[in-house]
Amino acid sequence: MMNMPGLFPLGHIVMTQGVKALIDDTQSPLTDAELLALINRHRMGDDGDVCEDDAEANQQAIKHDLRVFSVYKMATCKLWIITEADRSSTTLLLPEEY
Image (cartoon, rainbow, N blue to C red; front, side):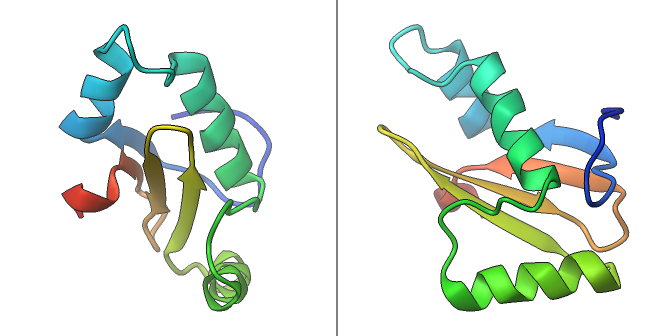
């Protein structure tokens, strides 16, 4: 679990095999440092490239302990970060892995 300030706890942070493969690919621009930066943005309430309705839903989710969903569009892919309502876990995944 990460101990950094934020609007909500992240719980156990996990990533799917697709995200792991991107990090392991030497041709991919996705790095560990970039992932950490995205996780921090998510935890601070910067939900990235979500639509207006999802952004509003995230604000309510943070206030009322509901699921928080962020989307980050990068040069080669789109990454989703989802923190569960009970704050037990946060998952980093590619949309096609949902």
